[in-house]
Image (tube, rainbow, N blue to C red; front, side):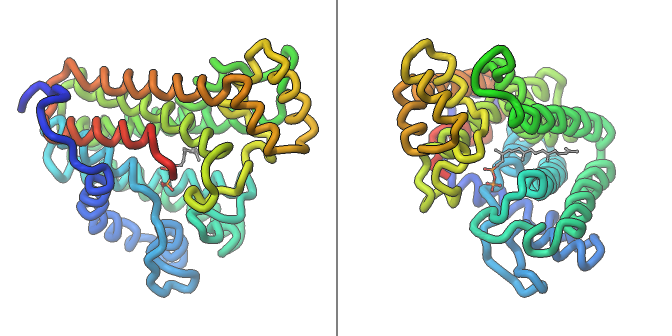
Length: 345
Ligand code: GRG
């Protein structure tokens, strides 16, 4: 094992890194989902992009597989056995799938990854149950892994934060765009760290923890994943305003239409400019979304979001230096961090 440095190994293409990790994890994920009740298992497989409604095989998108990749690479970087990385990857991917499934119900979203959401395809009650099953399966997988107890503690702490972040996000929806009750950027940061950062931090650290890596290494990986998570969420917010719907699969100006308190909007509203005042009026009336998007940019919201995302990716990369990590895996982690902060999907 060597101490990582940016020059230690040439970067691999991020898509190849994600592919390699997905391929590594798929057999264990398939085995775990296969243990579910058949009906519930079908909904789980549908949400993972593996089948159609009714169970016929499908080759739909199961998502980028970011969390499972972080788990595999975190374990490899810490020199943990491959089975530790795989168990961690299965657990975090199941939790991610579960959280998306329940999030779609809470938000009433009809589509995800260009297909009907599970609640739209199977009904709300069954979808709640499928989410519960995925959650239970994640905990069971982790508890059964060698060295699982500290891993279960790590995951439980992340889940608690996930719930806190989601609760804040839901509460933000009822708050105004201006005045003393408005959502402030620091409140957003805490929400994003809970809603998105906690699971990415846990993903990066979990395999290392299961493999018995030193606490300093586990903490460094967790910190890197958390910073990446906030950057990732901010980029997600930017895509929600300026992303190309043909590429992202998200409706055009969806976040503006829904009045979401995303980072670019909050940063724009915090600027003492006439554009920010006009933006607040437009957001309240939910009328001209194209003009609102332009005003977020003019009031500095896009620049502020980019700067915050860059700060977070720099912090994520910094967290990876200073602890001894296997060079190849650390380079792959860096490559992913960089890619995800610039992604278009
Ligand atoms: C943990 C008990 C417990 C409850 C969960 C529903 C909920 C509470 C939390 C929702 C958290 C959530 C949906 C966060 C959004 C994070 C995010 C940016 C998701 C999109 O991730 P991608 O782009 O998705 O990695 P793909 O489709 O690529 O997998």
